[in-house]
Image (cartoon, rainbow, N blue to C red; front, side):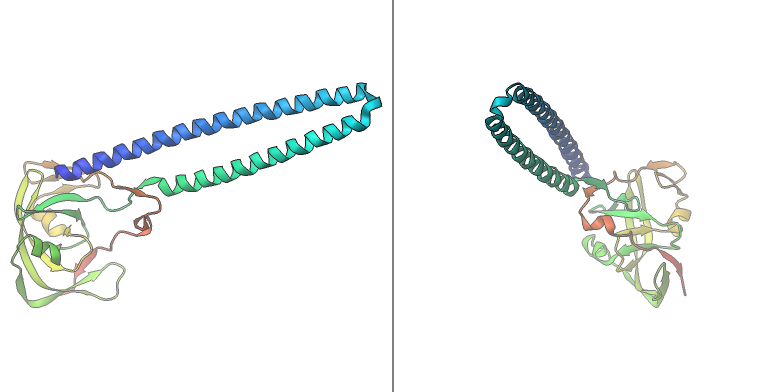
Length: 250
């Protein structure tokens, strides 16, 4: 638990430092553009002075014109090179900023659950799931002993035409903050580690909303885990959170 909290704090600090660095780079870029504008204005002032001198010294127009044309061509060449370099640099900075941008991972809020006093996992609450589920590997890691059902249980899943078949159940000792109890869960190959369904909400008299929940007659308040920040280029930003079991078919 402390390890997860420390990791989140380190991630937030790294994010703040990245934002500060980007801010400093933006200030430096704006200052460079101001200096460039000053030099450009100075160039046009000098060109205007040379034009005036050219008019006053019309008897040397040939030499003056050649000199001005040469200065003008060189100045345009330098300006074009600076503009191309600046455009390339801005494009690189824009791409780099987009790659390094951090966004909040949009997923169902997760709660930290300790299983069998030895395994820390994540769980989410699904009020439209009639029962609770636990993933197969969590059962093994926690050293739980599942029991075979007399007949397989079939569940209808949201967004799927094929029912989910479950053959085992297990009584799971769980701890959520200061709450301790056992919960009957169906063992399955789900994506999340634990799904807390309506059966648990009703038996434990849980008041739940998206931001927090109150468990039991003592109204033990439990907040979800802090949001997870991931890079904008992380594939998880495009993954929709898993569908939830809606009802048992038998």
